[in-house]
Each structure stands twice: as structure tokens, then as C-alpha cells.
Length: 364
Ligand code: M6R
Image (tube, rainbow, N blue to C red; front, side, top):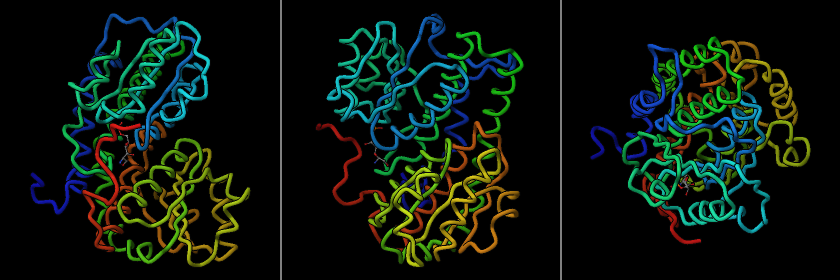
């Protein structure tokens, strides 16, 4: 049931504040300022290396998590798309943790990677949304997302719930490694607990995003740029747009622009720049200015400070609430989802059932 929404995708975008809150309830002990996992007896302290494997949007959630695991827990992370993982003869030391991320829990490539990692002696953690799925059953550690059924082929609420679970896992790994003081943990609980309200605040920009979707709907190609955890967001934004609007879109690390893609820039290629204010902001803005100097039309997604500092000369700006960097990937997922959604609606494509795509890809 779509309720009063026109598409399941729109409904699922709007459910995010509630389902992220629901997911966080299973991982945050707010009275005690603790981040916990629903697998209380498992000891993460001996884990020396993490391998993350997934496909599509779930892979981009894993890419964000790689930054977190390395930053908070100082544990090295290997990251692969599932279809490549098995065939590159990956090195997995005994005692490693393999994390598979999947909305459906049935994606053939991810499941094959899980089984391969098991045969190599890895402990398997599965971040899955369907609790009865094959991956949920085969994993040693089940870390459920509580997004509820996701019907739209374009994954939205599953992604933000995956991020919430992965942030909780990163905090637990950091604590097990002796790298999280009680004060750090308290701060993480506080920031994560702010995510649902921040997602709500981000949704308030829906009409503004709808109003500018026309500027993107006419394009043949669109680029998305971001740095740090906004780089996976750029990739996710491009995937969402191509999936449902059939516009060719690419995500790039902002610093990679000058190594090739800048040759594509002209006034017909909108460039979506994802850049919350913070330590990486100035660097991303200088990449953005390289685009503008070549006649490129920039859509800047930032917070009030960022838009104030760099919004001038942009084709459009989208102002997000100012949030802590830990929850920025969840919050900035909203405008990229909404932009893809409104562009697709403007183009009249089948938003919930895009051509050539299936919700669950059960062939390799
Ligand atoms: O069910 P999974 O999370 O394993 O699915 C992975 C991908 O097939 C999926 O994320 C796909 O890329 C979506 N259509 C993206 O919107």
C-alpha cells in the first residue's frame, strides 16, 4: 500500500526517519550511552581485518563503513563488489571478519561471496533487511536492519538503515579494540540519536528539490562529486539517477575530476556537488570551481554555512541541516534520492519498476 504517496519509492524515502529510529533502537542503549549489537556474547577484540562485500547501493553503504571502521577502530578494511570478490583470489587471514550487506539477503553474487569467505575460515556478519533470507540464515552474526519491506526497485530506506547498523558495528569494533573512550561512545550515541530528526529536516527540502529537478531532467549526462564519505554518496546519487531516470550519470571522487572527467564539462552537463561544511569542504569547493571555470553548471548540496560560503554562481543550491559528520551520509542520502525521484517523475519513467531491473538479483 502506497498510502498517500504516488510511488513506493517516494513512500520509502519518507519512511526513513521512522525506520532509521526503529533500527537505532535495536543498537543504542540511550540510558547507558552505549552502542550495542544484538549479538551480546560475540567478542570482536581478536578481529584484525575486515572484508566488506556487497552489490549496488548496499556496496556504497559498505564503502561509507570502510571509512568508519578504519577511522574509529583502526582495523584495515578490504572492500569489494561481490561479483569481483571471488575471482580475484582475495587473501583472507584466519580470524578475519567478513561483512556482507544486502537488503534482500538473496543477491546471488553476495551469497556466493559469503560462502567463499566461510570456506576461507572467516566469521560472517550479515547486515540484511529480510530476516528470513538465506544470508540471514547462513551468517554467524546477524545484524538486521529494521527498514521494513522495501518495494521500490531503487533502494532508499534500506541504505540509510544499513548505515545506521554499520555505524553501530564500527563503534562496537572500536570499543573492542580499546579505541573508544566512554566519552567518545557517549558522543556517538548522541550523534546517531539525532539522525531521525535530521532526516526529517532534510525531507523538508522536498519541494525545493522538485522545483529544480527540471534543470537536470533535460540533461544527457550528469556528474556527482564528493570527498570522504561523500564520495560513496556521489556514487549512490549517480546510481539512483541512472536507474530510474535513464540519464547517464557518474559519481567521482572530487579530486579525481582533473584526472579525466573534467574533459566532459560544458554547460550541458550538470554537476551535483555533495559537500557539507567541514574539514574537506574547501578542497571540494576548489574542485567545484574548476568545473565552474569551464562553464559547468553546479548544483551544490551543503548546509547553510557551505551554501553561504560557496553557493554563489551555482545553478542551484540545496541546503541541508547542519549535522555531525557521522550522520551526514544518512542525511545527504535524502536529497540525492529525492533529486533522482523528481527527475524520473518529470521524465515520466516507471519509478518503482524501472526497465531491465529486478528488485532482487538472484543470478550471477
Ligand atoms: O538486496 P541487495 O541489497 O543485495 O541488492 C543489491 C543491489 O542489487 C541493489 O542495491 C541495487 O543496486 C538497487 N537497485 C539500487 O537501487
